[in-house]
Image 1 (cartoon, rainbow, N blue to C red):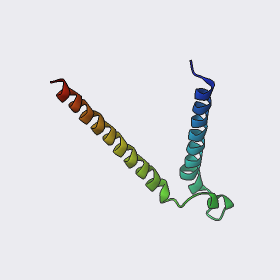
Image 2: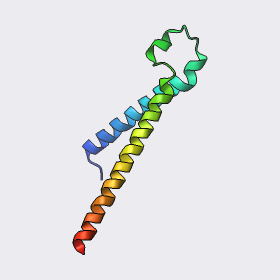
Image 3: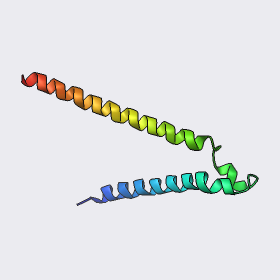
Image 4: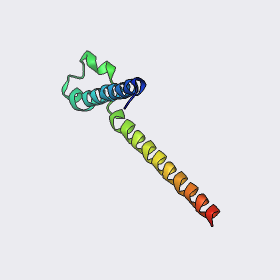
Length: 84
């Protein structure tokens, strides 16, 4: 059973994810259909970042997953060598 702290953290993570999803969806899908002189455009980064930011995040994710897998494999080899 989750404690109150766990539930609060989970709720916070869901809320942040929802805000990011809404912002990105508005930025990428809706903003191109709004007139470029509209005031809403000042709240968003240039469109080039709409591709670059997720690309950078994906590359960082792959980097950390690769580092984690490498760490686990090396640690597993050390344990196997000690057992022999």
